[in-house]
Length: 280
Image (cartoon, rainbow, N blue to C red; front, top):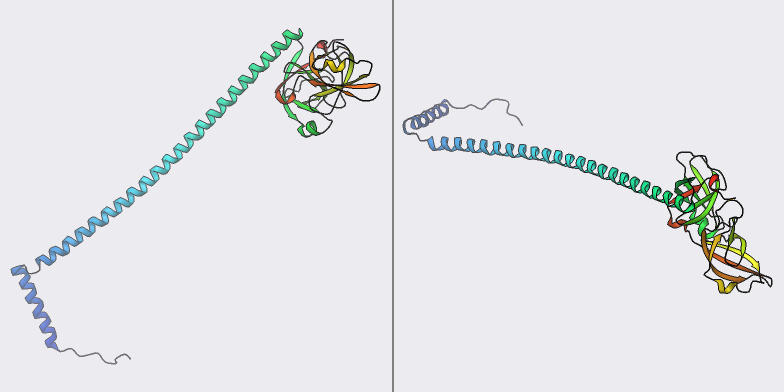
C-alpha cells in the first residue's frame, strides 16, 4: 500500500553527505586518492573499445572473405561451364569430321568395287529391334535430312554386302526392308543352284526351298551364296552369305538355310544405289 505523505529527511543527513563529498573531493585533489580507480576505469574503457573494434573488424573481414569466396566459386563454376561447352563442341566437331571421313571412304570403296557413281550414303536413324528379334518384320530407317528423292525398290548396301532395298520414303526418313524380312524375296545363286530366297523372319537368315533331287546339298554347307542378278534390282555376283544348314521339308523338298554376310546391328552408314546403278 502506497504512503500518502512523503518521508521527512533531517537536514543533518544532507549536511553530512555534503561534508563527506567535500572531504573526498579534497582528498582526491590534494593526494590523488582516487587516481588508481580512475586509471582502472579508463583502462577498462580502452580495453572494451579495443576488443569491440577488433571484433567488428574480424566480423567485417569474415563477411568480406565469404563474399570473395562466393565470387570465386561463381567464377570457377562459369569457367567450368565454358570449358565443358568447349569440350562438347570439340567432341561434336571431331565426331562429325570422323563421320564425314567414314562416309567419304565408304562411298569411294563402293564406287570402286561396283564401278558406279550413283551412290548416296545415309546414316541409320532407328531400327525396330523388338520385331527384328522376335517377329517377321525386319525394317530399318535411314536419316534423310536433305529430303532427297529416293525411289522405291533400289538396293541398299552396308558394310561389305547388300543388306536390303528401299521400301518407302517419309519426310525425313527412308524405310529399308532387310533380306531377313519374311516378305522379302531375293534372287540368289550358288555353285550348284539358283533360287528365290525368302526371309526367315529371323536375324541374318534367308532360305530356299529346292527339289529333293539335289542330294549333294548337305555337303555344300559353308559354300558362298551370291546375288544372281535376276529381277533387275541387285548386281550379280555380290557375295551375300553362305549355306549354314539343310533341312528336309517333305519327301520331295528340302530347305537350304543361308546366313547373311552383312549384319545391320554392326553398321551405322548405308549406301543407297539409284536406279541408274541397277543391273537389268
